[in-house]
Length: 179
Image (cartoon, rainbow, N blue to C red):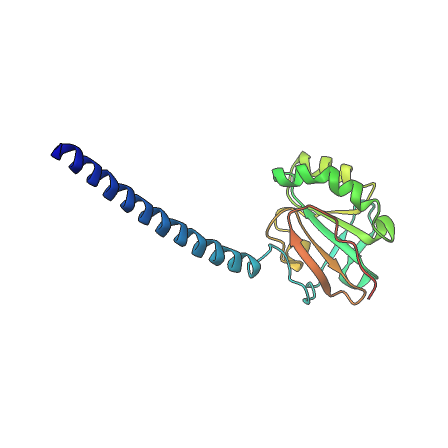
């Protein structure tokens, strides 16, 4: 009988210790969740931030029309894709469908494809119907002007050339709202 009492007391002590350790882990997880949420809300989204103006750039689209920052007028959506990015490949059909509905049509959507190789031309061909497409190369001037570091990423420029909204990833096309 003394062994049974000892075993029950030991089991209860271990159960209590396990409960206390589990509560401590849950508390730490809550703290980390809050820290991550605060960090994510202040994190770099991989492209120029709202309120900033992109640097100067000169490029040509796939129709051989010049593309310069000063030539962009009205609300313009600028997107960056890379053929080496699985998220870009996944987002491309959804982007093409949504970009077809962008106010002002193809002239108000600028799709920048960065990288080298035959995949760049293939991706550009898929975007040509809904956007003006610029092939930017690996160290392209547009990616530098817009501080694009994550793909896919986008920014919505207002009529003054200032970034109204920006982000990375692709869920829903950012439509301009009347000012």
